[in-house]
Length: 437
Image (cartoon, rainbow, N blue to C red):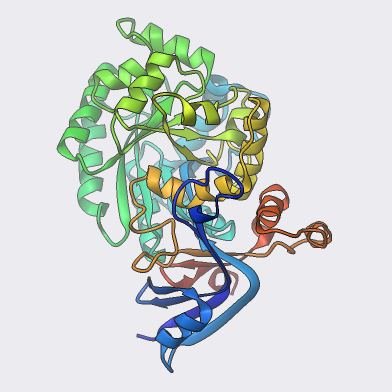
């Protein structure tokens, strides 16, 4: 197989950057090279050294002066909500009932699911995202459509059909048994097929009966290597309703705890209004709190206390995500721009290296897949994004005064969007330019 040699300014993270000057936390090459073969990075480092390993036949692609980073990772997104994004005026529960649930009923139609899955993954690639953790609709066909499209593109994605058997319209309900049976069938068909991963997906405690929560716990016990994803503590009305439905629980988190849903591969969307006990429970179980800043602002849900959660005595593992359609765009750059503002409103700052760590290695670590994605390390899958900090007239003008890599990254985060994404490689294949042709 022909190898590909990419040239450009390469940036990849080794660990969380404590400060803006914590240079040992990342690897940066002003003239870097990435040698790709059979979908993986086989060499990375200074271009001159990598070129020596490439041999005569390698296809050379020069991306200078652009930045080459690991492809972005989005850890919480609803692919059936593409036609719900930018819906006016509701808070969480009204938003679900008015917009989301009616939209998701359309996914009983497999052809609709296939169309939206294709357009959704197009949008992810356009914005530089190479891995997502996706909620499908309640319909088995929606998950089949998502995985088929993802597999065709050779993307590493994690997804699951939602399980929900109450407090929603008939068209988006399953039963405890059908939810279990459909999930088992999807796991058998798709988990581990190519780069596909399955996530057990009870939507949230409000839309699952105790019987269904028992089934979700059984699935987690039967498949301990799988991810589990749900929602937690997004909105005060949601929390109050959950306590009514589960009056025996100490708090919202206790519901998931009771049914055995906490753990290292458990992803809890939002986690805004956690008590100290709940934060301790997530920390002790190694569960992941998923920060969805654009959604939390758009729905008026609250401010996720990112730095406090990181630095408390029992810190939380944190991921970041767009949460489309509650979120307002598909871009992890835009997400971290809003995330910066949320963190600033809590009296803290997030430096640009920390932001880019979060949406690459940080999210890969949160998903327990950092051995495969999230870095430019030798042996990892060749999921790569090429970023142009001069992509728009406003960015070009600002770049005239940029003097450091930190300033360039912050510019990309603050003004960048899909136009700043010049190319995207998925398992070594140029996916954004392919899509345009």
